[in-house]
Image 1 (cartoon, rainbow, N blue to C red):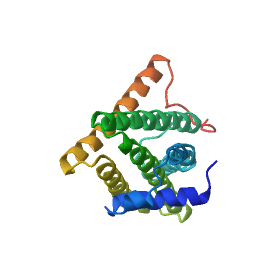
Image 2: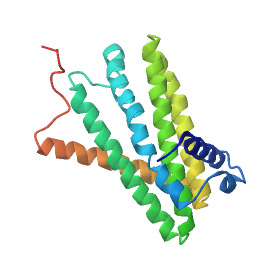
Image 3: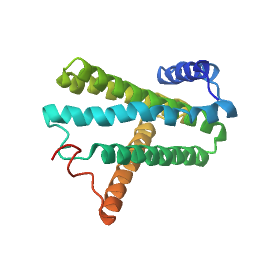
Image 4: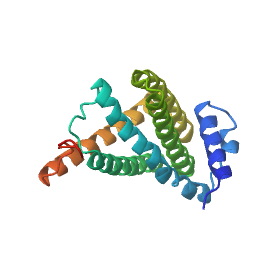
Length: 209
């Protein structure tokens, strides 16, 4: 199992990596147990992820910014969650492969630990922003704050990749682009599969008539 102390310790380590703290290797537990514990970040991220999905749908009812009109909420949430899990898993595979090609096996541990908790923090912050915007009845505020969350997420990811892989700015940017490409490819593949199965995210929402 994982404790709150384990989670807070891992998050402190991730922030040390993002800040380029020279002592990040001391602050981050890079043991095998810490690697396995980092995968708890995946189920922990699902709840805030669902809040993001549902919040985006509700915001669309006010702003029309996300083009979710007529989308079945349950189907949409399920598909977006599967997308998150597949993309996350493939991105971890890509990162582990890159570390292996650099012949630096020890870097896999901080890479997986740092990336897992960085993604968790990103989902949590995004969910918090959308949740607060809905709670106070200011949906437009979410769009502004999400820009800040995006910057925060990129800062975390940049720091984790640079410190764990010991790469310069150019290669780090390339890796981030590759990870984004993986996510985009998964999205396209899922859309094609759903179309082939005759499924669709669109349709009458419950209670719409």
